[in-house]
Length: 220
Image 1 (tube, rainbow, N blue to C red):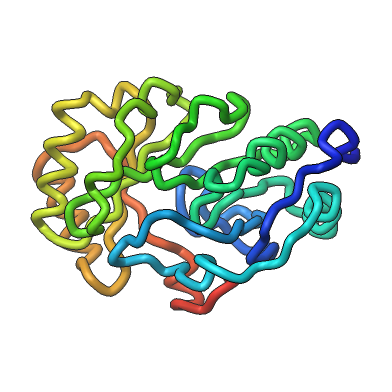
Image 2 (image 1 turned 90 degrees about the vertical axis):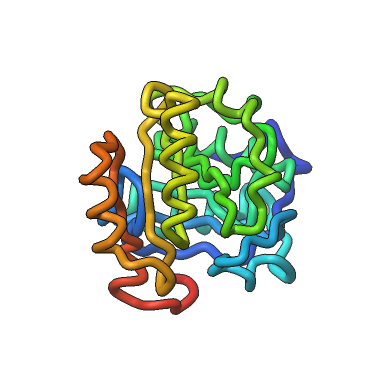
């Protein structure tokens, strides 16, 4: 399938590669990652600063052709912040029309209301230690479904307590699946696991599998 109905769509792409999904509900599954360039946030723990600038302009057809080179059916569109590029919505729709199982990793700072409902939205909620807590767009919660996921990356006990209170006060486990992830190298995974169990939180604990396997190596 080509993008004939969106001939002018171009996207600035940092990289397209296949790996194992390191996070979310599909962790461990072979996945094609499409990393878009650019992000309006500057989270303190960001591990993809290399995607802030540079990249290569590609037409939508070129992106779809590159994705088609890989056998994985799962595709994750990420960044940077992918929704900072208007063409991201076209990309998601065309991938879904091809029968791909598509997820969108987004910071939660930009409007998600126009995202194709067939895509799984993995929405970050920024904690105080991220340095971007004021950028959370709480209106986005209204556009989530039980098929989507809300993710907190936690750097400290204070971050955990903030996230725990947010989960309770906003009743987030009724909105979507909630994921708690320890920031790599900053919070002990064992400590986080123990806190979750002690407080009886009905959330999914997750590690970043790709960090366990490959460390901070880009493109993995």
